[in-house]
Image: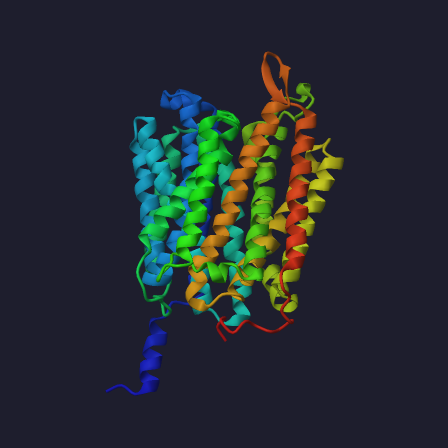
Length: 480
């Protein structure tokens, strides 16, 4: 019979190196965030490629956002119950399956189904953060979480030029073959280098709660993402928005009374969690505002008075450094989190974003102005995305980590989808005629920057309302 020391050594010998676990989870996060920009270079050509109307082809983008928002908190709860690594493997398998379906599809229906399955993989980021909490010592957790959080922006920023290159030089199906290959690489890596779970929550999946959340969120996100196209006062738009709110209110009432709720709303209502999640909407809005406005400014003709005349590849390369900055500063984010705490880090990040948009509002006559502002946005997003999970994890019990981080990711998704709809609506409404086609005016971009500043200021104020924990004091639910 083995002694206790021998058993401990045997288990330790089977444990993957921690650096490998962090690297593999970060790779999975990059694959996830890449799905959001995968088809962005193709948006203008999708009607011709898929032989469908522009209204129908917008679902190629919208469906991924909808599924991501719905699946993220649900996958977090499943991870808490059945094992986080197991759910990560399932989500990567769905990424591979969806990519293959879209790659071989001959119609828009197949592409939309494939893109829906791709959207589910977004849940690997909050699950990866929860896994890190389980396996890493406290002194390394902040840096690892900052790296994992950075992948939310890095994957999209790096993916944009890759997708643009493939769209320009290969058949459009190559984008989906690439996505399938990334998922296929991620599956064995997670199986080999991510350890099994040591913390699980007993109970059952609240199917009624999951269905209610999915229905309510779908209504809200349809209202936000399609309102400009359908008409904000149209019966269909109002039905989606009002119906979604009513369903979510009923869902909340039910969750407070369920024996095994999908999410413990009493935990989510704690001031630190509540203010962080509401501020996350502003951060998602600020991040995606730059993704919508900057590429258009860079690519519009100089003669229009609004743009710089760059091609798609050049614009993608100007936008890309923001993602690289997020990756590079992740060790600094981890050090700052340990030194001053996540709340001041969050406040500093929101302030950097506000200053970035003020800068581009005042100076946007040269390409380097856009580059500089985008780098500052990358710094701000890097700090805030690193701080939010740490604030959440200091405020919730260990068995709620996956679901609570999933809810935070959901709020960010609401912010990004809102930015897409609002910025698109402003740019469309404030367009001028240029050579027979409508292009956004200079004033339209200025309004967009003001809106992003407002979102950043609201997030900044909310960050100051988050209850402060003494420096060096770690919440008892954290390891160590």
